[in-house]
Length: 393
Ligand SMILES: [Zn+2]
Image (cartoon, rainbow, N blue to C red; front, side, top):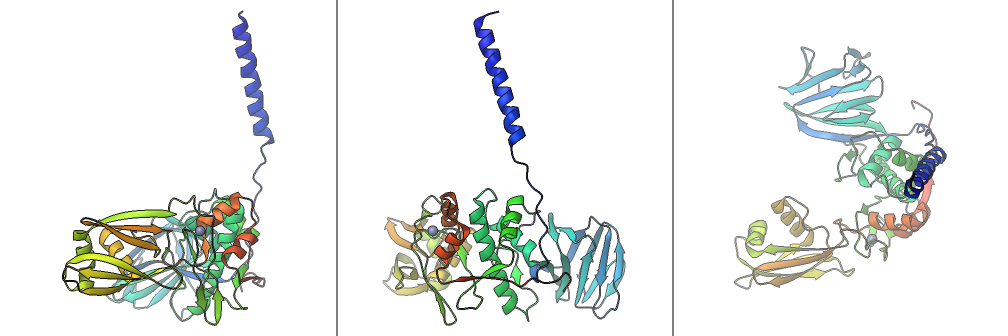
């Protein structure tokens, strides 16, 4: 046989044994411990709906009607509940009540193609509509937010910093929304709550930081965070406490570090007409606040009249008109090119406060710890841990 054949054969054998060896010595994923019991949060999954359909893997659900001293035992793998003429209807019966609770005995249910932990509450929002609330313990909630807000392959220290920020945000809302029907929206209006089973790494990041939250001067605060700050974050006040803005310097690899959009004057006229009383726009310029954030957009009309528009309203009107987040932040400059307005912006996130997610990712990749990340973006905050609670309390 030729020398070529034997050389090829030996290389093949060496590659195969290297592959097998690598596969054998690859560390196995260890089973993660379950979360310790934690306080419950109420997450709104849906508002203004007239009919809902839930599936359960465990075939047994307790349905609690208000003031009932025992639950209605529902045996089956799915249930459809509707709200009609001031009544909740299911299983050929109608109940003139304002809310009901469902407790899946396996602690898990499916709704709208998503799988969720915890229990369900339906609350009337009118004679023919209701809202769907998921009542879930804080720690599994946080793990789902880590999955909803970041990619699970991002560095573990980054995911841990996100878990602490998300836990703080949730605890603050829980404290201040006690009299409301729910604490958090399931979307980025509060925090993105993933509807899928949690990833291993988000559970690990949540477990590693279990119960840890931030406070300013010993008090809970709304721990804002954003996708990309674009270079620096802005200071914000919380009651008598202040959180400084910081020079981030870590997020320049973000796809949203800088952006540019070109908008025709025609589209601008349509998008902003309710603010300018049908006048025709000639040009725009911006006014900045003392921190360099765009605070106002000044609209100059063809007749040289000026309208001052709050930058948030400008952003909202344009994003609504284009039905997407065209204006990603409030750090932008405006120039003009014939019939087009050019907007050059930095970062993604309307407020510019707190943790910069892409900055935290880059810090994690440079082997900074979760505590380094937290103290970079919330320099005055201190870490506290929730006291343990006993199961079922
Ligand atoms: Zn940044």
